[in-house]
Length: 511
Ligand code: ADP
Image 1: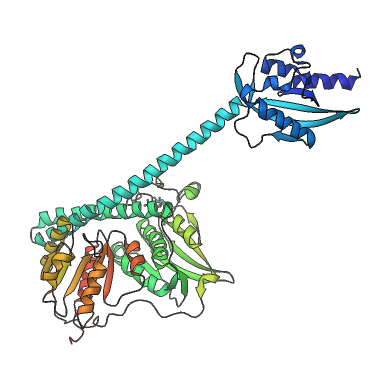
Image 2: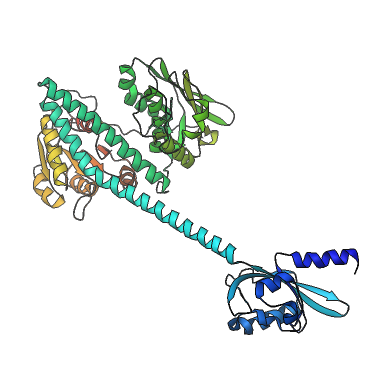
């Protein structure tokens, strides 16, 4: 044997695979040492025996067909590459999962087939463990989402009642200083819990893919002015300059989600700045509109920048306020993904932070449509008389709390649990009366259908506030804006509810 021949011989014995050569009749002509170890037959025992000896009896019939068809059109291939349950048989009758590769060999005038067999026991066990781990992770993730969705949904009603009751207590205790102070603190705690509840709901819905952006023309100026109004008192309390750029840009985007993204960024800027300014500016280049939220606050250390978009991550800065829960930027991340925007952060620790939101120019509308804000024809009538409030709410504790709160605000409130009892309530409906209704009511009708029925019956557009735990689902169901109708989410912001009622309850004819 030549030197190379001897090396090849040793290599054959050294292979991690069992190697066999069979002739055109399927009889084994050669087997290496690995085959001996794997199958428990010495080379001499295998020589001249059919390859089927190494195949479990129940597969032998099919195996014969495989070998015959292979010999008809031989090619180098993995036998049953797609067959998961391929098994081989040891001399003691036990079986093991096997990966088998066949290749044709021609020597002189004769055809042979080389067979490489690999013991897949370990690989199959690992992939089975991986599949099981993946299943378990999916199950845990679904359980988490279900828990979050259920818990936050079920928390809305009690939160709504607590919020309204607390607002009433605040009013009742205004003259008793120390009690008032306690209730005011309680109000702050309720505000924090409500914020957390909203953030949890937002992130669980965004991550579960349940949010479907609704594109519409959105004027930047109107988003800025809403945000200015939302944050001006917090900024003023810290003597911060809060400034928004002038803008006549109109975007094609989802207004709620887009406003939510900026709201989180500006909220952070205000939260993490004690002195100086929070500015919202914009710039336009050939491809992108950039909106920059800049603050002169505590800044973020460079080594923490890549973690701040993670859920529940908060930079551990000494002296920094712990107001949030670490979900704001995770919401920003999910919303920007949904809307096709990019958000980048630069910061100097101790000096301030700049967050840039990049919006592709293709999202800008060159021919700005008029602002979609519904016009309230009575909005400028400050002296309008107050109508009555007709409340439909099927949850008793929320109904009682709402009635108490609104009565203390000086409204004449009448309530019913659902559309069926509402008939009495609406019997002497007058102009100026406002319907306040839960969107989902017990029984067949939604709050919107009750409103439509009322409007069909009356010669004026009965004003209404519709409340829902899932504002977006309600807006999806409503589809188009409705004149003299406001949509608010639960737990309701008491101030927003009063403002909505204030505007809606003025009579069109009042001077
Ligand atoms: P949080 O609810 O804690 O504000 P976010 O997800 O919004 O959570 O932000 C994550 C963390 O990033 C914050 O806890 C804060 O440490 C840091 N951060 C975000 N924005 C700013 C900012 N403008 N200035 C300083 N730190 C910020």
